[in-house]
Length: 80
Image (cartoon, rainbow, N blue to C red):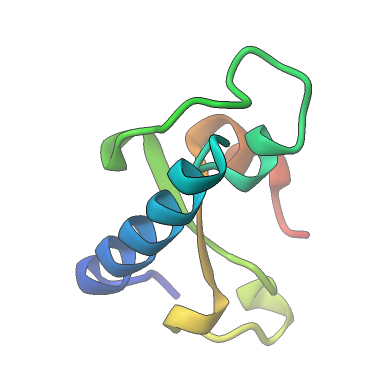
């Protein structure tokens, strides 16, 4: 149910590189908004690993189903 540290680090690194190249936030939900954080690159400790497809709905705990979200967006997302 929880992502291991290697998966989180891998996803964080990949997601952050892509975000920096686009000049966007590495939190995908911040990046699409019109808020003060739309260009912020969050540090790993400021983010949580999230299941893209909810674990409770059959989503796997693997690199393909992992994205890093800022803690605020991850907690707001809930079980969606």
